[in-house]
Image (cartoon, rainbow, N blue to C red):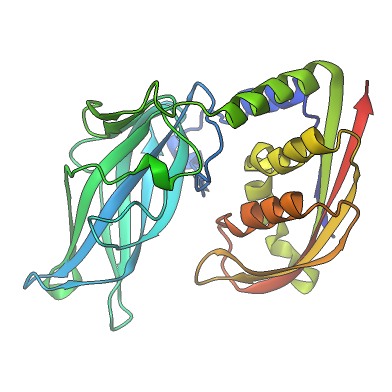
Length: 320
């Protein structure tokens, strides 16, 4: 059966977000795939982070590649899994992730070597990493060293900030050191909040108080629908971010409603949607459609096999 879900944007959404992060015992820990930050404004208890990765063999020969790592939040006792690629240490970060304000322990790192062997490192690392509200934390340069006998060593060293505000869609109060919280770059007063961002916040406050915005989704994976609940959890976790495309569109067209449907191809290699084609849309606004495409293709899903499916959204308004 297809998986469906609906959330009210008002008071019920606030309650949902307030209870979304349960406290779990060690035996009940589950792994979530966090959202890559795409420039949206952060809530007071949200921050973001980036890191720089270096992969080397025991002879100090460097090579490009990808690796995954897992963080454990101390307050909420939730595991978060990330995937990233190496890049030039002087480049603006390719990925910035959004997380709740907390102290995080590095628990696992996994790397596949050129021969296809999976190397793993088990933590926790000797120091934790900190996320603070509305700041961007630099978790430093992580050196992944492939030792002989298939062992993997991890060394996290402090690095220089490479985040450049002019290359970002959004902004932070400051860039901080993820190890000790010291400020690397103070952004407050320069581009901490754009006028567009302020307008969006004001718009959201108006809608919270006077209108109910529902976004109902339907997910169908055909013969592989056993994987639909896992994909649905990611959609649920990113509901406010996806919904923001519709909120922004309502600023341009206050009474817009209707259905939007896609066919998609999911890749088990990238853990993301690699092909997304629109079947039908009642809202034919290019900015809205581009926003939805960008948000959906930026999601990371914790699903094993590659698959195809259909995803549809029904946007509706009620209230004055």
